[in-house]
Image (cartoon, rainbow, N blue to C red; front, top):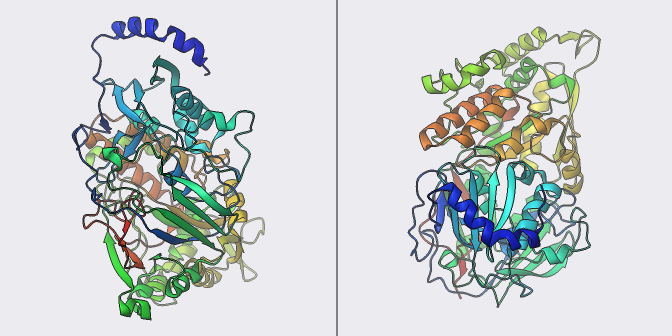
Length: 604
């Protein structure tokens, strides 16, 4: 679907009037939109609840990042770009309030308009919105960005683009997108699409990785870069959006530096030495026992626990079911049983962290998988009953161990499952009927110390089953390349999930990802139930039906035995320089998107 902007605009004012009359009563353009109901903030809101509108401006901060980077374009598959580029330098039509499950408010767009069925969405740009080079943000930029990202960008943009039937310029600053199917999330998804400057990419191949900074309309611009080592940003003194209510109390720090570490374990040493200003500690045992260094004792470095109410997400070792040895669910369950979580958790975390029981654990979206499905969830699962794996309807729970290294009961259970799947001990090794040994490689990125420690314990347990597993560690660039092309047997898999899951679930585990490279469906899920329940989610017209659909999806994903789950925490551990401050009120997402460095400031 392509349009001629000039042709469309010439016809817009006349054709739009006739078209709108044919539709009957119009929805009223509004300052914001929610997935269900109305957004919490009124049109005259002063600032987001989690921001301090009186926060002082100024100062600088230095952060540590794991890995490396070789590109400054985070919107394509090729290359590895700093995660800070998009939130600091590029804006979207609407901005998200992380104090609500899924509500957006006008950012580049001053208003949003849609109908009850959400068959279309229309955005009206703010007069005065400009890119950092001074050029105005136009509907031409919006249309070009939507199409280019959808057709040439990272696969995460493709699904929504396919649901756009037409794009129409409806005024000098307004554009309408009409959809091909029922999907309540589509207006919000398009509201969150990055808006790039079309002019920057004229005569260039958008898909080619580049170290040329993206020209955005955001609060910062790229200042200095040393590929793979560091990137710095400085505030744009002419930022068009500094006085918007949505931005009050946000982006208070004048400049940032992100330093990259090939070995993430040394970042804590960088904090101790004063080379970085903040570090997130994911290991509960280390947090409790090793953060007593001099800077903490003197008060120069502050320890904080930041609570949150978001789902656990999934974190663990993912099976690549494109590999024949992992296609049988009994094999995947056996290898999950062999993972001695209680021993690993005690060894690494002092037993402090609970295990992830399902993808949406720790939230109302959880399918409560250990129990039989509720009547409403069972009704949604009914059409897929013949394709569901054991436990989806009747309940499924991860095996518990006694915490000893032997883990005999679980290993006996695993052995039985492997035998049922055709794997038996032959000449001291686990082999199939063809005499092929059960061997596989676990791919990890350099510096994943805790994961490597957990995997080493796991490998020793697998030996007792006659399975030979080896570890291969690679740098971040190789890791991205191999996972983008699904070139691994098993690897560490982490997916953070929100309280408002939607179309991104297709990218995570939609069946198209079995063969399409660059998706996040690393396990290779090809499930009619998963695809169908995602469609049910995004077409739900009320929160109750939506929650039921997510709960059903949670049960299908968990009982799919796609991942050997690790642990989660409902609190984030953060150590930072005392000069870095944030509001007392923390949104329900906690230390996640929209928090650091968005609402922080430097106390001069």
